[in-house]
Image 1: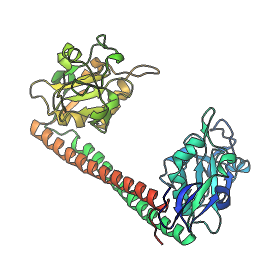
Image 2: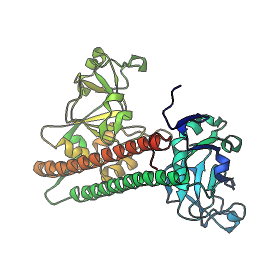
Image 3: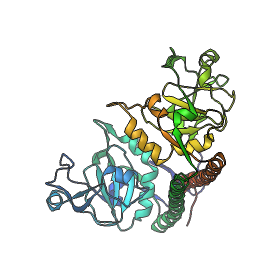
Image 4: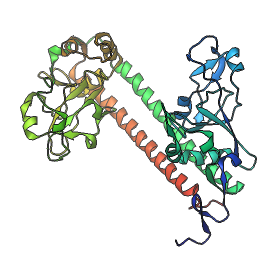
Length: 410
């Protein structure tokens, strides 16, 4: 194997000649969390004022644990341990290899490991190094009732180690990337809250508005059972019509690249649910009330529904379809769904029930204005989401280059 000048081959791959290789246990003190009392709501131990983080708190933290899902009382603390603010936690069960710093003193269960780097190791660098290796830690895990990785595998795990100045430079560069991502995340949250506030205001009843049962102003169509359609008939032939399911919905749009197809004969079997641009769709069982607006149908320009969806189409010019899409995504309709759904383990919403929903109908010109305002907000949110996704990809690329030494900062 030909090596670039200044690089060497080691047990962890090709790294700069100035770097070393060391086991995890030589870089940090590892201490498993304590306390696994069940049930997790036993008032003898839980419900006090002492933070008690869980695996999920680390997984969803994006590296900074700011919230805790449970608390302990003093009796709980006596059989646990309080770790100080700034401790780095590493998940060793379920979602393995997630890491995050806490900004408060906390206890934790034995599904987490508290990591305290030794003096010559920069905590920020180590956190990023571990995060990049999450897939490798997952491969080391054992499958019992759930995935877990034990200390016998974790302590001797080898890591490439830059000099302390280079660790600091890497940590600073990646922290700057994290700050940019966090800023975009906060902006995205703000834009979504602004949209929610705008929906509440724009969809507030006004004197000129009409209120009519949805079934009086809209046709409601769905597939009658499966009409004999079997999953074995689904195809991936891009020349055949799409078959839309609720699983293809994401934030009011269809992920067309994930949609299965059906034969032309099956598509023609149900002409009443052949989709058109500006149709509105809704899931009526399972995850009820997810709403979708059809802007356009890509090649071959044909699509039908599975049996879990309802198709709304205005009777005459009774409403603006984009307005109805936003109205069905509002709090009043969500409350209606909760009150009207039926079932025990698998909930459903009947077409007859949906038809009784009292839909608020401003004049058509006002409906168009409301739809345009909210659509512009959706476009701004989508642009922010795209920026956030790009920032995440850039950071991943930076990690691959900096943490392997392919790009040097000192």
